[in-house]
Amino acid sequence: MRRVLISLLALVVGLPAFSQDLLSRIREVNMTSTVQAAWHRSYHSPLLEAPLESDGMVYIQEPSFLRWETVSPVSRVTVFGDHSPRGRFRMPTEKDFTAEILEGEEYTVILTPVRRDLKQLFKQIRLTVDARSLELSQVIIDGRDGDRTILWFKEVKHNVALSAALFQL
Image 1: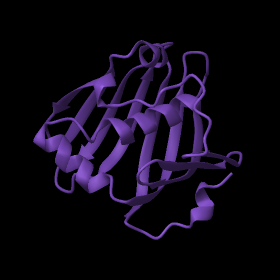
Image 2: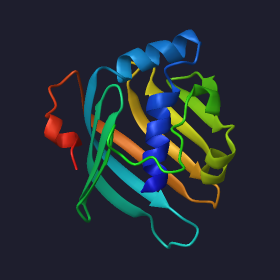
Image 3: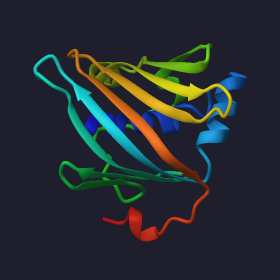
């Protein structure tokens, strides 16, 4: 769970400042003032016979609030915001990644960590973006230990009214 949240936060925080025009347009479409989306996650590990599947919701409110809610197979909520303890972890910025864009029927944005602690967590994050709408549809996180997390997003809503209570512990 922690890897997925850190990676999702890296996506949210890391994309905005890349200077490439396409990345700027992708960010504009996907990172509006608020975002609400359902997600499905499939976690693959060499140690598991079958992937672990889960479903949930994510709520993002600019500039720094994120609620990651798992609804099945077990219920769990994690909230990041101004009140969240940061500990020794420093939030990723654009300087912590290199970005490469592969163009085709969809765009694939490959974020590779350059910061040492992020390199220890994962090899790369691949974002799948619809070429027409520029909406993010999938995130693949390749871990250092051979694991892979795939997140699919659906029912994505931008600029919706979100209750402040969503971001309180």
